[in-house]
Image 1 (cartoon, rainbow, N blue to C red):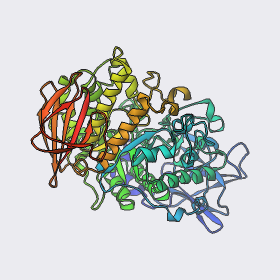
Image 2 (spheres, rainbow, N blue to C red):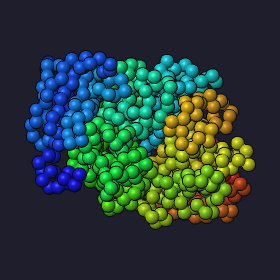
Image 3 (cartoon, rainbow, N blue to C red):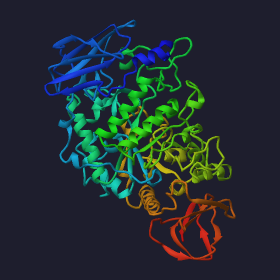
Image 4 (cartoon, helix red, strand yellow):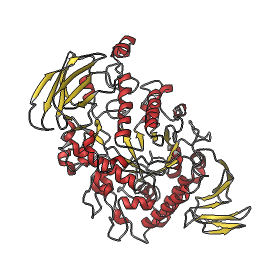
Length: 627
């Protein structure tokens, strides 16, 4: 496998054309596949994406730079596979560059993308913010979103995001209307490309988050109303994006290029050994924990990643990408991705998991928390590449590696003050082994991984009442929302979502995973918490002091009984936050008259009252003032 990294191989077999896959030209389609080590490639053509045999098997011919090619009189709706012969034997595979596929992704589909555009798609446009820090991100799984909406006609499908007017039994708006009311700016969708672990023909029988890539450029068929027709999944995906855009909400796609579902993927069947990293004994490296690690540093996989993300951004008008285990990718690849995406959409948000996931490549080359600052934003773009901030995550609620551990909001405030300050500063203060500039952090308390926040608070503070734990939740949310950086939440965090303490629900039941919209009962702790989040989002969106992308001057001080004061100053504007994580009231004497935006119970962009002198800070709360 060393041959792939030689100068000779790179020079002779690096293909830079933009026409890999199936390209329609009038009544003909040209098929191109990069297979430099193949001795023979056969194109197999089908009239449908499953069951029946090929109506034609035709040898492809070698052209240049490792590319095999064939032009056939066929077009939109034709399904195909390749049979590739290499030193590893003869194997049949789908096309990694395919844009659609038949049921379960075993056969690729020739697609005329102009036939997949919904009405008024040409009028649809990107949604985004001027800076990353102006965004508020809500992370959700497609099935979780709608499976328990009784009125939905499209439970668990892309089209559920297009349904307006849906309500729960208490008359509270749910679905897309709820998102508009909540005020979030972006929906982050857990994997929506074609993944391997749900049978699209019988999708109700299994659940999976989708971190098992099969066809990277094809929408997941189990989320469409007809997984057998490769055209339908694209149309319905676009309708989902269009509906969210019409609601003023951007769409972020979760992408998983760091591993494939299995080592012998479609890539490996075409060019065995090229797309992966290996140990000295010849086994696949496994820093991902998923049996294999892809090799982003190799020219043709780097090209694939850039091509793939660019395709999704342009064809589906997406507004951002979240990179799973981004630390496994090399910096140069992420630099090229940033430039390519921001050339298409300057306001697109790019972020990822910057953990150091083992040294499958040199540590200085990894796109991790320590190195991410080396990526500079394309001129005029909203940002460069941000990383998840696990320091504030664990600092606020306790370590994710200890179910019973407590954090700043749940009883151990004195031990985690520096972690919280690191988050509030946008990853700038030198209290972690890494730091970033320009607030290039994603601040959060919960995501799909690990315990839901409400479950974590129950496990660590079971002796406290629901009311007390709800205060902890709101306290943490307030800290995240005033922090420099980009606030992020798992869907339902704002309504005290529980997964029955299932820490890793990636393949658990729908009952465990789905959002229970019936929790939103006016007067309940869940409803009041949701309203508090709504007010926080409103406050943040109206406060340039909090969204200055790291330009705000921040001064920390102390409350008498263990809390902290935070003064934010930017552009002749000031915001003061009094943070009291204790179960006792505290006091603070203001130096002048301030406008109260959050009093520990109510919060929003409008002034609650004007105050001066000594103020009482309620237990487990944040008071926020503007001047």
